[in-house]
Image 1 (cartoon, helix red, strand yellow):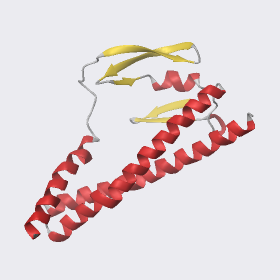
Image 2 (tube, helix red, strand yellow; image 1 turned 90 degrees about the vertical axis):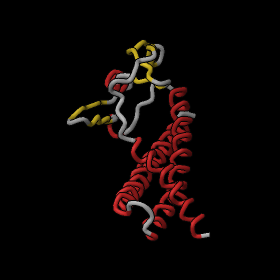
Image 3 (cartoon, helix red, strand yellow; image 1 turned 135 degrees about the vertical axis):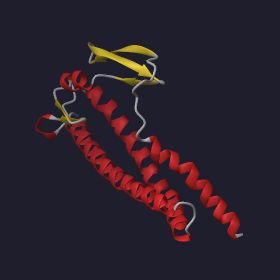
Image 4 (cartoon, one colour; image 1 turned 90 degrees about the horizontal axis):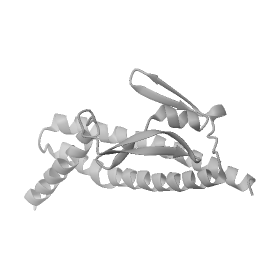
Length: 173
């Protein structure tokens, strides 16, 4: 029975370690599959490229069109909304953003639950039992715990944005 448990844990580690490493994959050298026009409130703003089914649009063009500020420094893009809040150009845009935020909240909550109930406990058990390269597993475990912290911060920000959207929608009635 112990061999089955150890084999299961080893399988989980192999399956999840790729996920941890995959976050740093670069888009450099990827083939552009197409282009798309970016339109904000009926106004053509810029063009986006499509790589592997995802669109990548110029952040500065879109953010400035929405009335916010964007800065770039040492590989980090920072978006600052005017007076700390997003200015939605229309009620429809606000409703569309609300739907996106609700969806993002659901995904992040599922990710956190999966990390906390399945992946992290499997790593902890593997480290405890000395399965595989325990130093590497300890490093990966710390990265996973860091992901939980980051996801919780992101979740809090999205919930705050959702509350602000709901408040604006109520006042617009």
